[in-house]
Image (cartoon, rainbow, N blue to C red; front, side, top):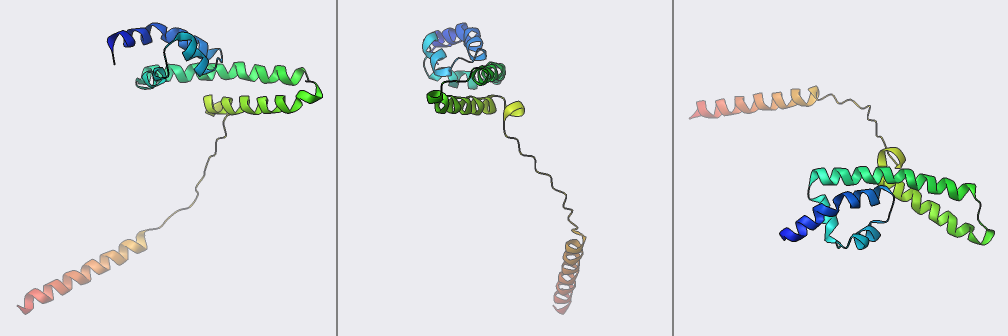
Length: 142
């Protein structure tokens, strides 16, 4: 990466995080900061930057939740209800993606099965013993 680009990316990183935390759409933030689409690849290339980006997204989910509350507390006109319902679903989807622990669908699988391999080990030991016996018999025949 070109040094000038690297420096530009670093200079706008805090502004980027603030905008993301304010629930601004990433494509709009990239356009406003004039950094281009490769910026997200630059952010993801470093674990610290990526972690800060994910934290900013988690903060943004609180803004999205307040938008949902606002939409539900001020009922729309009947002709807008379909649009509002879709907007709420989209906001909920983003919240689940950006803050999976808090708002996402988490499936926990609990396995309570126990496996007893002692029988298989005993059978393997017996096969090994019989193979040794055969090997000894073959070598004694020579």
